[in-house]
Image 1 (cartoon, rainbow, N blue to C red):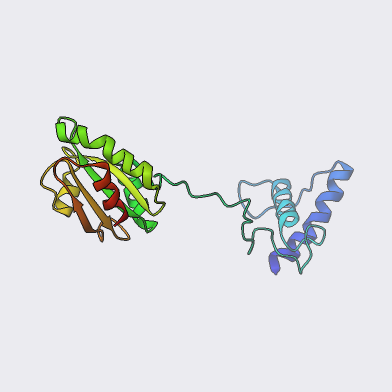
Image 2: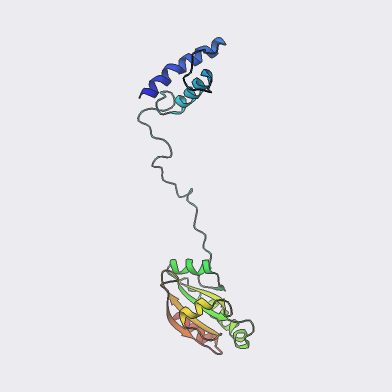
Length: 193
């Protein structure tokens, strides 16, 4: 309260001095600051404070206090995977799909594997036929995603696993298809099981 009354007393003097072209010459107890600088700073602080009658009323609240964003202001969360489709594996997309409660199907594919190459169109056709929005498919590189292989007990390329969980650490394998040659019908049945 002491600062507000001091500020109220200085602001009119500053205004009066500025109108007359005079600079106040009072001594300032703070070293290094000129009296006019302090008065100007206090006047600007007063004008921006809630104590200034012209700036705000006592009953009004700052605009940001308690204000909730409207639906137009809320930014949608970008989904890094496509539900009902198979796509290249990414750790972020895998985590997000699990967090969103999706069933995740992982195809452990190796580019050098002839069976993987034969299975790829059948796996794609099965996803195209089902378009289940609760299933997300990923093609994981058998040679690099060894942590996933260890977690789900995959010991051979051309293996497909189905997992559920809230995050990668809690994900559990609920089904396995392969290894070996697969038909579109087999993969479709696996996706729908």
